[in-house]
Structures are given as structure tokens and as C-alpha cells.
Length: 301
Ligand SMILES: NC(=O)c1ccc[n+]([C@@H]2O[C@H](COP(=O)([O-])OP(=O)(O)OC[C@H]3O[C@@H](n4cnc5c(N)ncnc54)[C@H](OP(=O)(O)O)[C@@H]3O)[C@@H](O)[C@H]2O)c1
Image 1 (tube, rainbow, N blue to C red):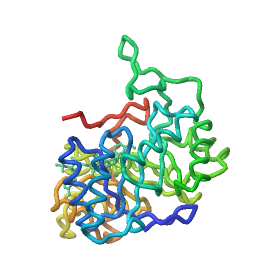
Image 2 (cartoon, rainbow, N blue to C red):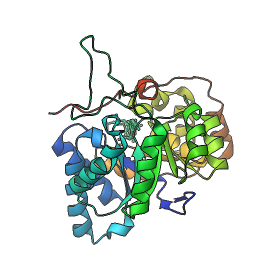
Image 3 (cartoon, protein in one colour):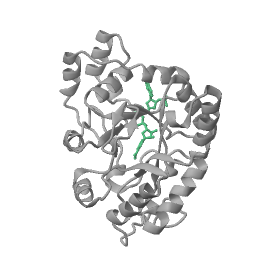
Image 4 (spheres, protein in one colour):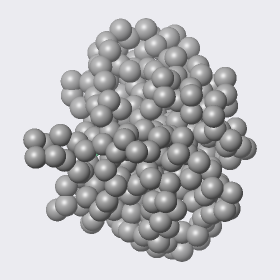
């Protein structure tokens, strides 16, 4: 469990719902709940909040699990940054998820796109149409109002660097509780992590397994050698490293066996942790942080 600066308790290992296909979303979410995941990361942009909500509702009642026992996040998409669009976008997500209150609402990226129903607005040359008429602070004020309304327990940001986080943090009336960014041994985000620790913000790492890409952290020779030595899988080693350095994390196992594997995480011996810390390879796998355009969005089946 991680406790945020507003005393919210978040399970350290979260299940990410960036999954292609309705059937796959439902079965992977049910498998994750059954395996013991209690933290679910969703987004308007993933286009599957309804399926995640359905799987959660069914799983909660079948397993006798209370709503309060799970932690649910969803995210405001770039086309809804105008303050007057924030509450309607929140309400739409809540309706799809079938929830009355949300644990955490994140601004998905700091980039405002042209408002409207088209989630990926582009000009005739294929360039993203940004919205210059709204600032991140304008959007944040509307997020703060959601917390004031009592329907959302905490708010935060995603795909943001310190350059944009610092001024927002200074101006925020309600401080961000969570910052969600790509983080793994090839992109440790050490400076951002230090800032978050100093301010009691939870750094929530996505792509802790490097989005499963190979080559990538999952088949890194140092990670493989540590895994063989400690009798764990490379995935378990990467997840343990993420937890031990003080982040929470999101992972997206798509089978029941992998869901159990990814929750079966135990601390690494200090020398193994240090060895992974010393990996020098540097690679960002997802460029969403640079443009606001997601690298990995499921296509409709
Ligand atoms: N804020 C953002 O912009 C943003 C961007 C991306 C993701 N996210 C969030 O972060 C979540 C995590 O996604 P991710 O891609 O970053 O997750 P990840 O866990 O780093 O990578 C998922 C990949 O790892 C593989 N995998 C999972 N468990 C494994 C295991 N035990 N052994 C070997 N391979 C394994 C999966 O393979 P299979 O498919 O074969 O199971 C999949 O290809 C997303 O679902 C989403 O909620 C947020």
C-alpha cells in the first residue's frame, strides 16, 4: 500500500486496462480481480471503461468483494481539457464504469487537443490539432472542483515531466496525489521520483516491463541473470525493483497465470537491487509524454 499526500491508500501493484478488444478486456480484468489485484487503472481514451466496469461489477459480487476494497483510477482525455468539459467527461466515465465515486482522476496528458468528440483531431497533413485556449492550470481548477464535490477522492497527472509539474504543483490548491509516467530500469525518472518522494506524491510507473517489448528490460541480460539467481521470473524481478525503489506500478497481464505471477513479488536482495539500479541502457518506449499522442491505444476489433 502507498499513502498519498491526502492520506489515500493505494495498492502498490495495479492492473492496467489498456487492452485491445472487449472480450479480452473483460476476461483479463476478471482474471486480475480473481488473482488478487485491487487497483485498476482505466482511461476514457482506452475506449473500454464499460467493459472494465462490467467485469468489476460482476467480479465484486461473485467474490463478495466490497467497492471500498478496490482502488479505481480513470483519466481525462486531451480533448476535454476545457474546464466546462471536465465534469461531463468525468460523469461519462463514471457512468461507463458503473461507479458513484472514483478513487483517482488523472489528467491523461498535459497536452490539450482541439475540444470535441474526435479523440484524435488532426489537420489535413496529419498533424495533431492542439487547443491553445486553455492552460493546464485551468483544467486543474476543474479537477479540484471534482474533489470538492466529493465524487472523486484524489486527482493527479500523467505523462508529465518536472518542467510542467513544478509550476502546476506551486499553483495547485489541491496538490497532485499521484503522477503516472513511464518508468523502468531503462527510464528510471530518478529526478521526478525524488521530487515526488519529497512531496508525498505517489509516482505510479507504467511500462514497468517495458511494455513487454523485446529487446527491452524483460530480456535484459542483467535482469535475466538476477532472475535466475533469485529463482524468480524477469517480470517479477522488474516489478520488485519498481516497488523497492519507492514507486507504485501498473502492469497488464492478460492471462490468469500471468496475473498471479505479477502479484507474486518479493523483495530483491540488496546487491541484486543495486545491480539493476546500475543498468546504463536508456530508452523511452512511449512518446506520449512529448506530444500527447498515445503510442499504444487498442484499435476497435
Ligand atoms: N499514462 C499513459 O500514457 C499510459 C501509457 C501506457 C500504459 N498506461 C497504463 O499502464 C498499464 C500498464 O501497461 P504496460 O504496457 O505499461 O504494462 P507492462 O506490464 O509493462 O507491459 C505489458 C506487456 O508485458 C507483457 N507481460 C505482462 N506480464 C508478463 C509476464 N509476467 N511475463 C512476460 N511478459 C509479461 C504483456 O504480454 P501479453 O500481452 O502477451 O500478456 C504485455 O505485452 C496500461 O494497461 C495502462 O493502464 C498508461
